Image (cartoon, rainbow, N blue to C red; front, side):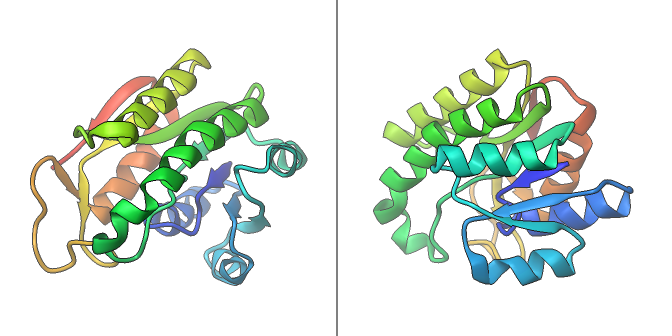
Length: 186
C-alpha cells in the first residue's frame, strides 16, 4: 500500500488503519521533517515531491504497491491563507495526479476529491484529477468539508457537505475495495 500525502490530515489517520489491518505501508511526504512521524505510525517513510516525476516514479516502483492512495494536497495550516495556495494546490492536483497515476502502473488508485464546488481553477483541477483517475480504472472519494481536530473547523461545523475527519479516514480505508465515485459526507 502506497499512501501519497501520508503526512496530511487524512494520511496520518489512514496510515494506522492500514497498518492495523496488516498492510505494509509506504508513506509519501515531500517534507523530510515529517518522515519520523510516519515511521512512528508504522509506515515506511518515503520523501519525494509528487511534482518531481522521476523521483515519484522511482519511489512508487521501488515499493511495488498493489494499491496507491492519493491523499495529496497543498493547503495552508490557516484557512485565511487558502487563496495564496490556490495555484500551487491546483498544480499538484493536475501534475501530481498524472505523475502518481503513471507511477502506479498496474496498481489500483484511490484518490480523494471534494463533494462541493470549489469554483474557478480549483474546481477545474479536481475535475481533471477525477478524469485521470477514473480513466485509469481508479476510485474517487469525494469528501465533504473536514471538521474536527487539526482541521479549519476544530470547534464549529463548516457548511454542508461536511464530514468529521476521523470518519473521512475510515471512508478512505473502506474505499480500497470500492469502484467508481463514492461520496463521503455526514
